[in-house]
Length: 489
Image (cartoon, one colour):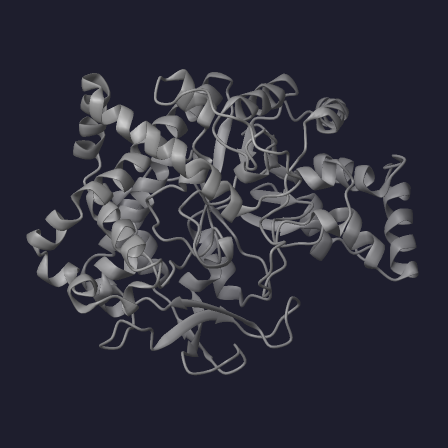
């Protein structure tokens, strides 16, 4: 298997004139740059509708897409809207401002579709191919009617729709429902076009799927028996992790816990449907929080932190035997970071899933680092969306630790001028089948540029973006020289 190099760049972090990265020309230019420099994997984060805190890991649906990623320029080129006026440039993503700005154009596109027979046919064909989108349109419309409140707080007729399927209720809101379905059609059409462009350039898309789904999601609303909920639709137990490197009180994510006993009786159909769909979006699927298939942290919903909880055994081998029988071509990367028991790694290796390592956590100048340097079935990172940037991490280390790492790399032949590039070259020189770098690390940026700080809620997480590609293109050219040197073409 050839060794591959990839870049982690979330789509919202792309540059562009509309306040957020999208599926337009900048994304295609980015793909061109990857291909030009022999980088054949583009890793992104989940692209589902953003939920609480704008986190892609609390989406409103595991199948629907985030409308803010729809390119207005592409809508103009396709004859849906008049040429859009460009807003004031922004250095980070202001999701509320972008939503307000794009909404009139989306409504204009909707009205155009209703007057254009060919566009109507294309929309109808999409709905026929993707029957789930009707339920998502209903869910999104009902949220709009209730000022975006969670479904467990809706009026009874709306909250209970999954059980009643009341046609009169739907008829009252047909226009709003169709509008949200139409946004999914635009999203899917533009994403497919972008993915086809990437494939033409031999670029694979590595996508991320959260282990859990958000409580305020179509997934939970329509499949309440698949989760541990009370009679009001509220979770009795929630997900997270105990105290760790990131947080002394653990991480209380708030996602509902799966009812694994019920899922097993149904042949894990909920998960099979979910993974089957995501495999049509991405070429490779990184399953976040893979360890929860072995053991997961179960927190009583009444607890304010994640300290109180217990480890519960997950479905493990029975799950993957069933899923891989149904989806034999599924390409999975297991996010297996953190303090794990041996059984998690045994589960990963049983199915030959590549795992992950992050240089920030695993490089130790006091050892021979064979686990990093020699392992082949591995995706090696300088950092992920949840870590400090590489440079930021290094600056926070004690002086002696910094000197030890610098000297260790020098002694092993990595004498580049900056620590970032020494570590980048070190990663490329390993035997790992895949090495992935966040763009922040290629640009040698400090922690102000990190994507997310786990366990925090603020207006900084998920908001970082590039202002343009100029500096990054120079760094990609530099990276290419090392890709060739270490034979990763």
